Image (cartoon, rainbow, N blue to C red; front, side, top):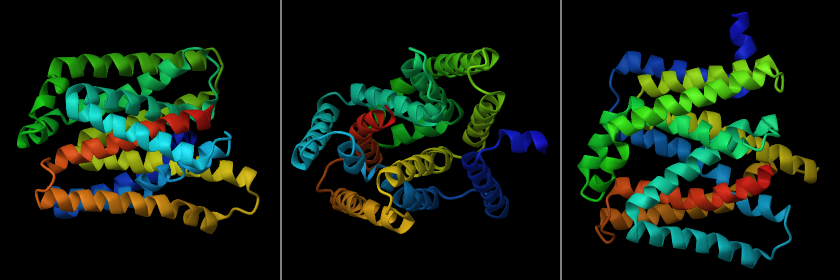
Length: 304
């Protein structure tokens, strides 16, 4: 028990509580229908996922002097260009999305350590690749079935080739764990940092193995990523705005959160009415990716 408390931080603890609650739900109800999984995922993403990127403008403009109109124009231009890439080069766009997501997740996860190594950006990417490949490796059959379910996502099946994913899974995890151990041995970081990271990796592997892909990714994205980023954003703004409190911070998140949700709702209704000829699955992937790209760029400036 003492070792467990030594490895836990507040995010791991929250994640662990959520895992225990899910175990209870699965024990009582058995399998959870995919529709219920999606509804629960949408609720949590709406409450925490979208808001964690809702103040990109505030974060960037607090450090860089740039007219708001210019910022929004560049932000929307980035989204528009990426949408065009999805239209003409869907497979390349998916691979690019996975790569930028890997970097973004790794950068967020390791941001507290203030790494000085010149290889830190590579380390961020390896951490994210390790996490994403673990998600795919343990849920490959489910993911392939999802891709086969819709005509416009069948083209993505080669991306999730079993042997390729297997090599990436073992390679990235081996490199990541080896690096963390070497860093601890060189005493550049306390042993508790190493144990905390290894314990979080263990929790990620456990949940990705035990739970369906939608539930397991939502767990990670909310409890180990979004909430952490929201806390970092709040602490930063609290330093430069002494009058800021939790209520004012939440109010700050609301405008862009509502705009994003309204936009997604309109597109969703268009898909349901077959006005937009795209599957809901592909729409979900594209929507997340085009929002992720500018957000990841802003967060890199934020962490630097």
